[in-house]
Image (tube, each protein chain N blue to C red):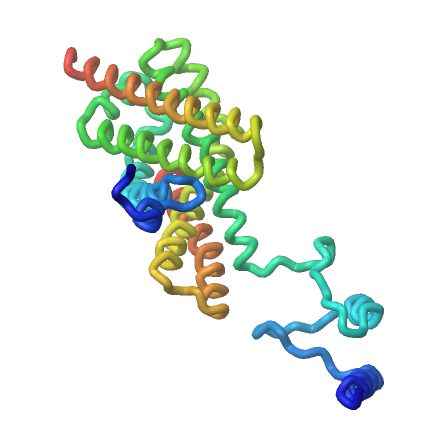
Length: 128
Length: 167
């Protein structure tokens, strides 16, 4: 027997049974991206068009590396939760599940690729 | 019996009233076209008018709202291209040459330029969302002003970014 009233059990839970956590996560990542976006544009804007060794050296430095890594991770998590809202709006049943699974896998694949590239650039830069 | 008759009579009088000018429902200047007047006459009576999708002009707030979702999802193209460019840089000279060629080609430039605009647009629209969540900008005229601020602001910021980094 649960020693909790039905009202208490339902507190903060919507139809998705996860309360407002998604909305809050979007709010937090939105604030983070607000700070990261100008920094990210400066970082990438100053690296576009450079030759390969200079690109590697650029992203191997702490600030460009950390800013780019943070932007991709926070941005893609924001993307995964954002597409989830879109998918819930437009897709039903099996198509909804498939779309959610695809979006989560895709998002984390992009994160993994970016982190791997940035980590290798940082390590290559140590060698030089 | 008396009451029912009175109601019927009132309704009959209401239906016989001469045509009244359309009430202003929106605060901005709304001038119905001739076609709209004719269509409205067809529906004269007590039936509600529903906005027909092909003739319904979306308010600027609705356009800027749906564009938030569109730009958010379109940004995938930009970040995918960028991550591919980063991975290519550590993969080898040949891979980087291909990725860098795509990035600096006119198509890559268009994708980058579109991504920069989409990023600024989504950022400004996101700021509006934070204001909405805090209970601000919800009045009709403020919401309309905020919409135009997003449209104009994203264009100006894109131009500034272009001037700083590409020219």
